[in-house]
Amino acid sequence: MRLHRFSMIAGLLATAAAVAQPQPALADLKLCNQTSYVIYTAIGAATKTELDVRGWTRVEPGDCATPISDALKATAYFMYARASQGYSGIQRAWGGGVQICARDTNFSVRMKLPVKACPGGEFYKMPFAVIDRHSRSSWTTTFTESDDIKSLKEAKRAGINRLLESLGYHVNVPGERARDLAIEDFHKRLKLPADASDSDLFDAMETQALKGAAPSGYTICNDSNEMLWAAVGLPKGRNLVSRGWWQIETGACSRVLGEPLKADHVYLFVQGKSKVPIVSGPAKLCTARNEFEISEKDRCSGRGLSKVGFAQTDTKGRSGYVVNVGETGILPPVPQATHAGLAAK
Image 1 (tube, rainbow, N blue to C red):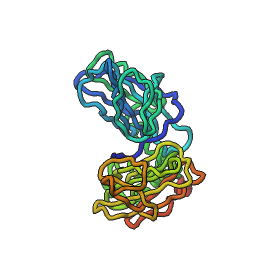
Image 2 (image 1 turned 60 degrees about the vertical axis):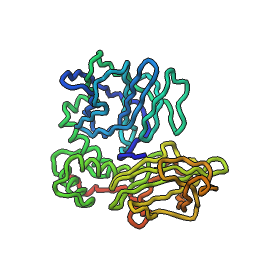
Image 3 (image 1 turned 90 degrees about the vertical axis):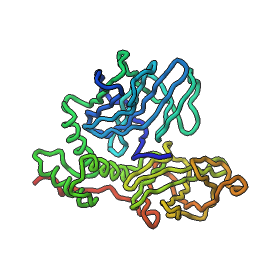
Image 4 (image 1 turned 120 degrees about the vertical axis):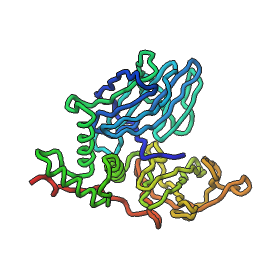
């Protein structure tokens, strides 16, 4: 399984509205973000007999995404969106009154109608809204936050400011100096190239904010210079269950366990492109070549599985845990930055 950035846990439903408008020139579903939050969206499509639900599509402030690029032919469409949990304060969400099964990490699931119970694997019901597209084959939904953000351009600017504030910079003051200094400092601290785009800036800022936020569940951040593949092990009764693989891009984070942690320990195995272990330890668990969930740690070879050593990470008393992985293994935790001295003078 592959996770691009994060899929966050749902928060309170925001008072913000989702404004829909037709787009007759194309045949697709487009989602535009006119808020100051990086948001993640899930879409459901229903026929008379089945419900297809997919998530999560990431949409930066001031940008648009197209989760469905074909003509809209399903009987009904549904949508739910939530802000990245890298932000401090109450988590924002956009939804409605239709309860549909989804999960906190990336997913694609098809269910027979009527749905009597959510499937396994951390699925639970989230409050989706009906997309009233008036039977059109193309539709655009614009997420809004307040009347103060009147355009996608204003949303992009507000989005950069909000993430800078989450990272400890003070930029919401009169004038431009504080904001300019904060962006310049962040570029230097993260060694971003001079020609980095606004999208590059959003990626880097959200990743840094998430590292300091420690959202519920178990998150792995790739601070190495190569693609990583990760597997985890966690207690289940008297046994240990191993799950994998999560493919984590350089500079990205993947929230591999969405539910709040209850175990004292989570076990971790990480390898690079050459399949040489980067994070390993004494806890021997089974793994498979492709995506897997294995509930028995013994008799690996007899079932065509491999047994590898997992490292133990201490999660006792924590509902959320973030582990940073570099070229040589697990790195020290990343502290939340404070830059009060960069306020305008």
